[in-house]
Image 1 (cartoon, rainbow, N blue to C red):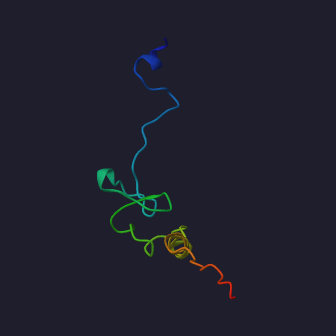
Image 2 (image 1 turned 180 degrees about the horizontal axis):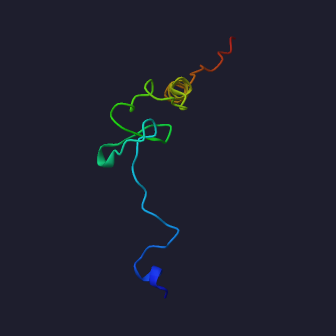
Length: 79
């Protein structure tokens, strides 16, 4: 084992610092993870406060279509 492997950390691997993707402010444990996958502070957590790439309208349409399937009655044969 090398000295860097004994400590449990590789030299290329560094601890990630939690920073807001909008203003680069350190957020720590109070960061908010958006549906677009980014981490934001309390000021930038809403989708209208940052340039969110998540399509909320398409997700809503898919959810409605999934929860409300089209019901079609069987055709009645007349005698």
